Image (cartoon, rainbow, N blue to C red; front, side):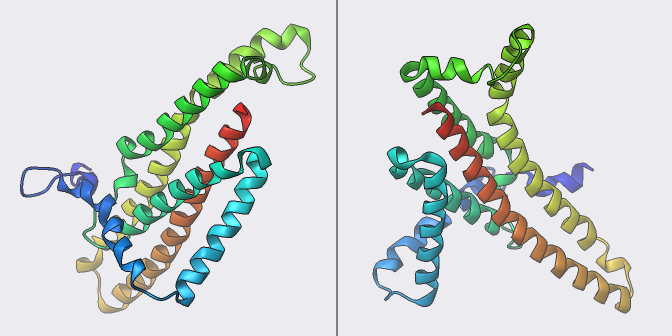
Length: 222
């Protein structure tokens, strides 16, 4: 099992964890956008961003419409790192809680600080759902407080666990290749391709879920 999880170990032969630099590979592609004429791919990407901006804007409301760009940027960065992990021999940074918790915790702390400083009564009202019987109010305050405190942890663990699960399954099946015959090897390759397509869908879905949940948490403090 130690060898199995070693694929997620951020270490290189130079003795320094340079694997974390894979998250910044997208920055090397940005200058080229100024020299390319708009293609169908860029127009499709812009149309997708516009749809995401409208959907997140519905959650935040018209007063906080500009805040959607923060969550669109977060979605793009997580999506890029998720897809980078599907490339062979490229480090998957989003499979580590160091990265995912680094996304979730500062956002949550910022939301909580802003909400409790500027909208204290609104935050207190969220601790007791509407229609709660007076007898259950102390218990609901405890439950809502705990559920609020674990939000950054659930965001981080959800993303990291989904990335780890798919990569472990691909690694386990790939290690069986040298021990199989030609027919079973062909079936294994077909199964690996299907799992790779599934992991591509998971990469998009988990990025979208992370961005939408962060937007929902932001809308609750305003």
